[in-house]
Length: 273
Image (cartoon, rainbow, N blue to C red; front, side):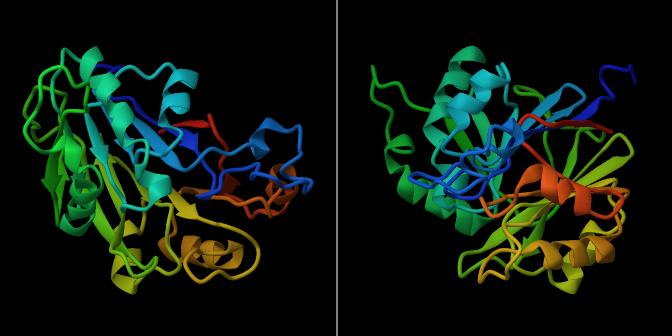
């Protein structure tokens, strides 16, 4: 396998909570900070896996994220759940259809999530009317391990292997993902308040674990910092990054306090495995 085809790169498109940071109308020190690492679009991840390009969640900021990082290709989309901050950039996928010779883009999620996608975007999945510019997305319900190949080609044994991993977030069914490619693995769970022991086991030993860390104080549906660090210890990755961050956390301050191997993610951060 050539050096280019074995590339495994993580790009953090957004690392913020549902409000984004700065929040509308807030004058706190973090929201008014001049440090660009404190400016957080809604959470999303872009993966370069050899020749395959995978987007995790279509945040409301997808257009801005794609333009900021010159993203022109998406071979597949993974959905963690159907909350607005992880879904409402969905319609912007239509531009990628155009860039990719009008090919349909496959999107993957657990059945409950894709049912919500169909409900919210029902105008996309009915009969196609000539002249309407709409996203052309092929929904694939998944429950277990699956693979994503380059657009237009069937995945093979060397394609990225992706496992949905159950996490506890709220009443909606939410998953994280474990992605294995070229002998390396990452875990991604941006929205969760707890991880069941079975899910810890599925993530255990990944090279990089990316985990929810909303704020310092406990929250009903998201991990706070202490819970995130405890989960990292149980998963024991080679390194970990915290994401889905609110305006309680100032980047430079927390960075100085984190234990070895744990870092605070920020928009535009790239990590090469």
